[in-house]
Image (cartoon, rainbow, N blue to C red; front, top):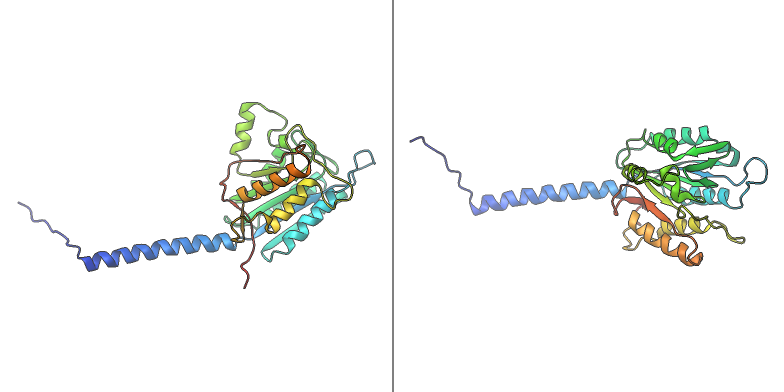
Length: 263
């Protein structure tokens, strides 16, 4: 009969092994937490109030973009590019997305904010129609896993499908590695009211990102926290005429804004 060796594990050895396993778990947790808390944000903020001619002019989009840029600039871990009015051409927008987002690492956050005219399939840039497909391809050059678009534009609910509401088109958009937070449903306009500094959606978006949406007060605002806060606020202020929608393949706990801990 061949000899076999039996390895005896004493209570002391078991305690040591459990201790090493516990230390490994703590290390993984701390590394994950630090990555989340100190993720850097890369923002491209676009607002078009003054379109060529006068028939398409709006009132607040440039202010919307400036408000979002101002908000993000208060976070020390943010790098941004801002394009207003005639600066916001199709070429400039996609180039800024590629250049700015290319700097992001895997666990950082990249954000495109757009305020202006929308259409079923994309955004109206200063010099033409910019499709969601073009925007998504520009964002795809980044290796970052936390990608998001905030759009304060009429009919923005349909930008994800290029105007196609077929089931296959909806499923393809949902699988894209981008979270879309859109100001209104596909059949709704995005409301701006005289006397306000920003449109309804941007008003509650900036309030939520500043901390209003941080339900558990951990200084990390997640996708679900932001959606719950903005959706409720916009429905109330619009008297149920505007309903923001969030779409894409992402976790409810995906960080959309991290604020440094207070010292």
